[in-house]
Structure formats: structure tokens, C-alpha cells
Image 1 (cartoon, helix red, strand yellow):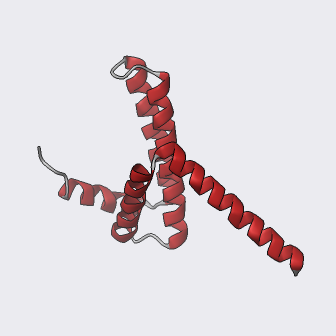
Image 2 (cartoon, rainbow, N blue to C red):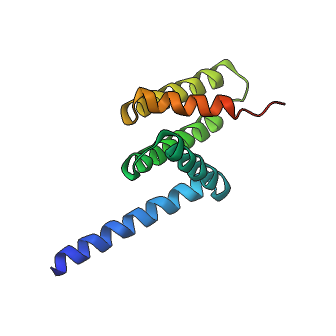
Length: 118
């Protein structure tokens, strides 16, 4: 019993540290935006909590990779553009493994309907 409690506390501590690391690497404001987007995705796509958590982690990882791309390449270069496309492609492929085609189509339709015009 005592070992189980210690293990649970250890796992919670690891998750808190990992989440804090995300917040520091990504930035609090951007992390909040990601979380809001995932909440909206959950509503539109009718995701359960498990899938919302998976999508949130996926978006955090993609954001960290995009940040790394910005650090590794000069903005506007072909290498920069190609690296960003690769991150986005990988994100879309991973999203397709988490969500159904209908869910993804629902999200795309929502995005298209709510696109802000300049």
C-alpha cells in the first residue's frame, strides 16, 4: 500500500515537472492558447478526455519542434519552410492516428467557417 502511494506521488511529480518544462520552453501565453485550442477541438470533434490529452501532448511536441526549427534555420529560407512543413505533416499524420477522419473533417469545417478575414 505504501509503495503504491509513493509510486503515485512520484508519477504526479514527474508529470508536474514535465508540464512545467513545457511551460518554460513554450511560454505560458502560448501554452494557454494551445490548451484553449484543444478544448475547442474537444467540443467540435467530440473527443473524450483520453483523446484530448493525446492531442494536447501532440500539439505541445509540435510546438517545441517548431520552436527548434526557428532556432536552427533562418526565417524565410527554403530550409526553414521545408522543416516547418515536415513538422506540420508529422503532426497531421499523428493526429490521424488519434482521431477519426470524421472528427478531423469536423475540425477542418469548423476552422474554415471561423477563419478570420484580413
